[in-house]
Length: 222
Ligand code: DX5
Ligand code: ZN
Image (cartoon, rainbow, N blue to C red; front, side):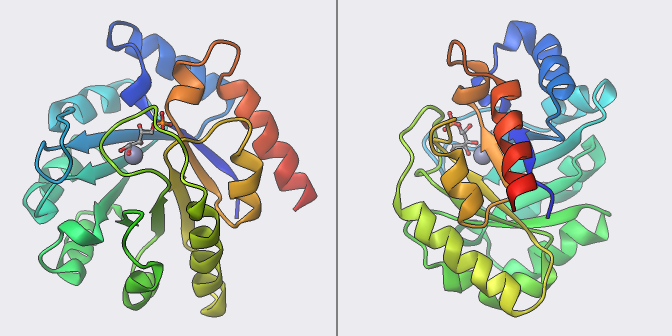
């Protein structure tokens, strides 16, 4: 699987968003991670459909929309029509997981399924052959800039084993607290899509290019 960087715009400067998206794209990031929060599934509010629509107009990156909202089936059509390429929903937030995955596919999008740190990885097992992306959260969802949960390493390994045992080619994404210091560990644990907010947009001296370099060098070694 190709190692892919997915910068999370939650950490971007809204006043410079277009410029910053251009910079991460030039650095080689292929996915753009867009965090949608409803203040119910997670405590924070972020943004909604019109932000995706507006980004889509001038961005050809893969738009990776992470829905941290309850009953996400209510908004699949709107995000798909706004231009999302991947729509990821939380297992914990769906009334009917299979129906939600089918709905995402019915609009021609790739379907992602995510689990919070406290949800057993094996609970995604029955859906693995129906999705294109599995997102293992490495922080409690809701805020950028949190510290990486080391337990995520074992959870990624477990997820990778489940995927490989069935011969599936599902993107394994990790999200939360990723930095240049721990990105090698998550790649070696099996993740190939790396979400990074603060490490791309906020840390002085640490940017998309630095992370991309590590992703490329780990790809060669792998
Ligand atoms: C957290 C979001 C993340 C967040 C990651 O709930 O899902 O995508 O933006 O930010 P960092 O990389 O700063 O932990
Ligand atoms: Zn996210």
